[in-house]
Image 1 (cartoon, rainbow, N blue to C red):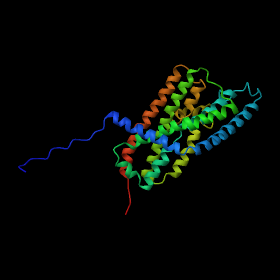
Image 2 (cartoon, rainbow, N blue to C red; image 1 turned 135 degrees about the vertical axis):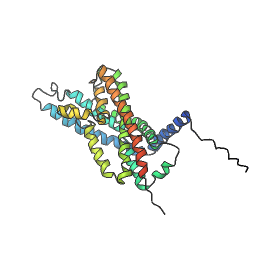
Image 3 (cartoon, rainbow, N blue to C red; image 1 turned 180 degrees about the vertical axis):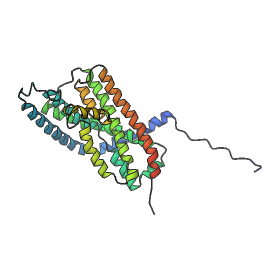
Image 4 (cartoon, rainbow, N blue to C red; image 1 turned 45 degrees about the horizontal axis):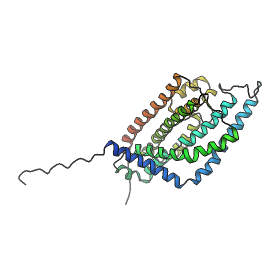
Length: 288
């Protein structure tokens, strides 16, 4: 061939617009997939109503037992109407931010299906976040809003001190969704090392109920517990957006709370990318 070398093949690249379109399609597909199984979410409205009812009656009885009376009592700095709002917004927010990234990723690893994901020209972490956003859009329309339609007439929901807090609360829950998705992704990455993380996932779910503040506000606990929790990302999943709704983050503290959530969302995403890059080195597949 007279020493001639073959011409280099052009390197395939996908532009930013095409990349954004790709992950938007994953959001759309996740929404449509959830829509196909919407009946189970209608029954979930009943389940969440029971959760809210149990907490409503519990805290109503606790406040009524105070010597100063239920209406004058303050527990953890919250009045009874604020506590009822805390319970409702916490559980309603949970219905929006919940996802199963940890279970999905661990199942793919244990079944060997992660090999299919690894050969695709995309990043699994971003794909799963896109799917979580699509699932959240479905949940908001056909799960979260129906829950509100049921629980507000039953138990009442005090509005926030200022109408603008509705928008800030929604923004805060969107950041909470990203934080929760990245926590779940990190837990799912443990499957590369442990193979079976079902016990870890269950422990994480129980721990999250407590550390996110869904069950009990952090203001009910000693100062040292509040300080310890303040250094963890879990408060950004529920406690922060609920306190924003209640007007407990006025002025500069509102911006600080949102920046804290954004910092955790970005930090956990970077940590998840680092964990993924190290975890995929431990992939072992068997077949025949």
